[in-house]
Image (cartoon, rainbow, N blue to C red):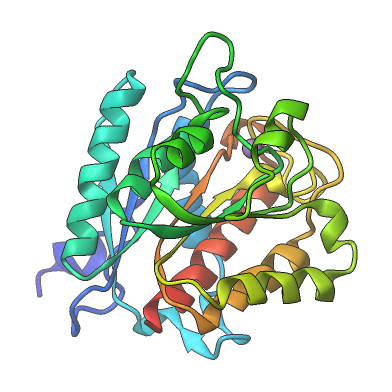
Length: 289
Ligand SMILES: [Mn+2]
C-alpha cells in the first residue's frame, strides 16, 4: 500500500469500513432544497450528516452490532438540479438500481420531496414516515408537487400499500380528513404521550408488513432536540422516543430509508448528531437483513 492510500481519505464520504466483504448498505446524498417553503439550506445536509457520523461512536450497544464490521459504500451526492421532476427521476432510478443489486439504499436529504422518487422504486411498500407534518396537501404555494404535497401524490398513484405516520401534529383540516383511511395509520403525538402504548400500536401495524421503507423528516423532533430543520414545530418527539420507535424495526425487513430536512446553517451540532445516530442505528438494523 502506498503512503497516499494509507494516509489520505476521501472525506466527507463515508467509505467502506472494511474491504473484506461485499458492500450491503449504499449511501447517497440528495443536495436538493428547491421546494423548501420556509428555511432553505437542506442541500448542505448530506455532508453535514457524514461529518457528524464520522465523529460519533458506531458500536450499537442496544443492537449489539459494530458498524466497523459492516460494509457501507458511500456513492456520493446526486448531481445538482433545480427541477423536482428531474431530481425525483434520478433518485427513483438510483434507488431501483441499488435494490435490484440486492443492496439497501440509505438516502441523505435534501428536502422531503426526494421521497417521492425513492418510494416509487419499491413496489407496494409499507411506508413509515416520521414527520410533524402530513405532507398531504393537494397543492402548496402553487405547486402540485413539493415537500408539502408529495405524500398525497404517492398515495393517489397507488405507490404505497400501507402508510404509518408517526409524530404527526401539524396539518390542515383537509389533510386530517384525507388520511382518515383504512390503509393509513396515524400515530400522532397524543398517541405517544404514553410511549409503550404508541410502540405497541406501531409493532402491531408492522406485523403484517413486507418491504418497509422508513422516511425520517427531522422536524418530527421537538425543536429542543433538533432545532435545525426547515419547518420547526413545537411539541415533538424526544431523542429517546424516536430511537425506541426505530428499535421496533429490528424484527422486520428494512428495504431502504431516508433522513431529510436538516438545515446545517441553523445547527449547533445537536441536529446533525441526532441525524448521524439515526443513520448509524438504521444501518445496524438494515444490515441484519
Ligand atoms: Mn415535515
